[in-house]
Image (tube, rainbow, N blue to C red; front, side, top):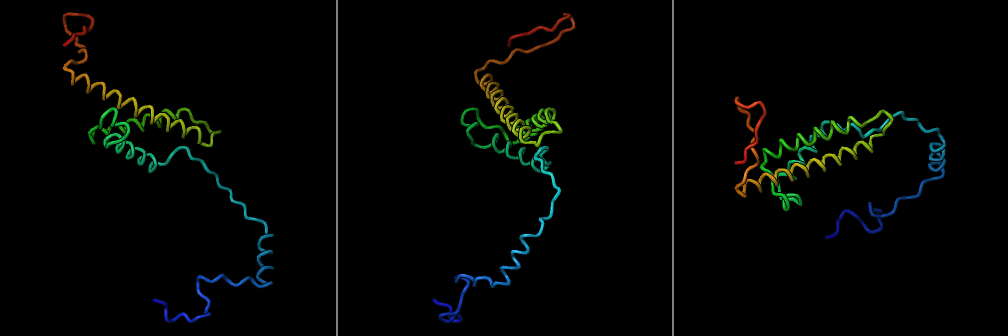
Length: 159
């Protein structure tokens, strides 16, 4: 199973490389003493790109509609409903965080706020859905608000 083209004593890629010559060391020293080129780039993580926002929505849909820690407690959400809820959660969280952003920020704190808002709104969504599902399962329904032409104020009826 040995390679017949590699003769004994011939250096291979597994052997250590040969040390640099004195002239190569001198050339490397000259290069390292040259002034570094300055790059004038700025880096900001806020606002996230549309691609990132789309990925957040996609992940939220997966979290809401597939078995997860949330679904064990609150149940899974149908795919279509999860897609709509995820889009709404992300848009609201983005709007909220964008409203808090300032020009002085590097974006880290705003991105953390955005993330917390997504988590908070996701939890609120699954809790509200679970509460409405349990109400429907128990046979009772939430109060119905109806307006009639005979009365000036709306009335609440228990059904």
